[in-house]
Image (cartoon, rainbow, N blue to C red):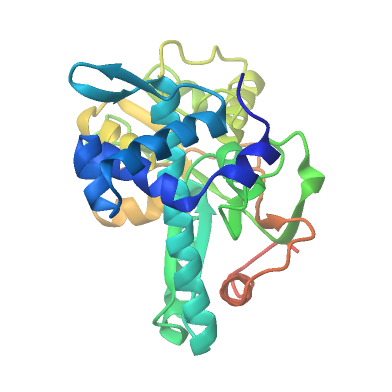
Length: 310
């Protein structure tokens, strides 16, 4: 039975986590012990203490040595995360003591990338020593990272959460959408299109229950059309652009700013289709009741300079 969290917290030591990481990197207990500057008997004892702390066997003993099992690989993965978080903590503390710099972690959905890039460009001109981690993902995954304390801010939507009141919305921004295709798509030269003219083509769409997928489903329903069968589904910007590059018959819905940026490089072509529905706005979000760090507040100030709804 896996030990309780209070038991693990009270007994686990950082040096033990370093040993786990070294064991994976070095490939043997002997080399791992040398890497963390302890004796091999000391390393053997430390591994026994780690398994006792977690209340589970983490390694399989074979004639070749030690091999991490599924639980062991899980613990090693989190050991790396803890080590990385401590490195980030030290970096941020140094920035605070120096009165500048620091570290910032921001989550972003695809449609808000141009907004964030403009704000970050201005911020880094003022704070050139600021380290910034940017994570692009779906709103649901970004909110999960906010909950875990791994993001200072997330620019996404709370409607996908069961607890939308768990977040402070610092500003709201409108998202316009565009229908896009390969530059040589058969409809690329049209002056005006209706949905029924585009519907028969192959589609790349967002996964189920994502806001842009729901909007597209609503558009087809209002037009009395059957939703595309056998579409390609992805939430990845790069994958979507790659699909459009490879297939001149493919069409997709994309945030207007991202479409305009990509069209400027000749990667895609916007199609003249007017959507009846409005896209749900996204917000600049933080965990409710959690004070913003100085770099996060500076970024919020820059984001609030952009056009917004509130």
